[in-house]
Image (tube, rainbow, N blue to C red; front, side, top):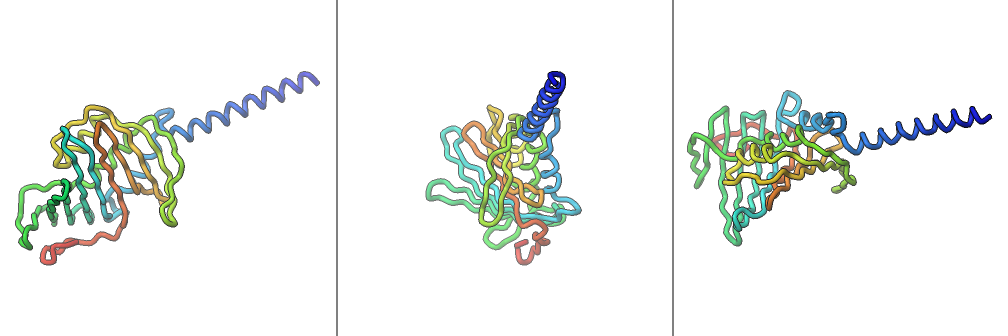
Length: 224
């Protein structure tokens, strides 16, 4: 009887240890070097299955005691056709810039006139997903619901090198001093909805939506 009781207690102990390991694994997707969130970013980037999306990008905070509040909207179709609007807010002052990309050529739209230029800002829309591929210390948070949609939310950290590679694709004159906290919102169909980078006194926040709804740019209409 005592031997059977010992066997039962040992078996219960093993079961509890296994359950504990499973809980820890689910809470920290980076354990054993596995970043399962990468699957979501892979499905979000422009590809054969994801032909386009709309990016709503917000950059706000402080650089050298100067307030930054930039709002960028990009319609990206197959990475060949892009319609980009950049709003820079400073107090009551607002600066608006309009750019187009068509088959590898860049254009600035000003006063209803389209002029070809050598390069433009905020063209790389997939870059804001790169931090998800290198996220560390991942912890699952409470789900967030907006309207009828519920999102799985995760937080972790990314190195300042990753953040600086993202900043290089913007028009900010800044280099991150510290590593960033990253927050990722995932959709029920396994794509990225939001990704936040919080570091120093800045926040870079990208939202992806309208998958496969983007269209080719018509240079005559100056819109995607």
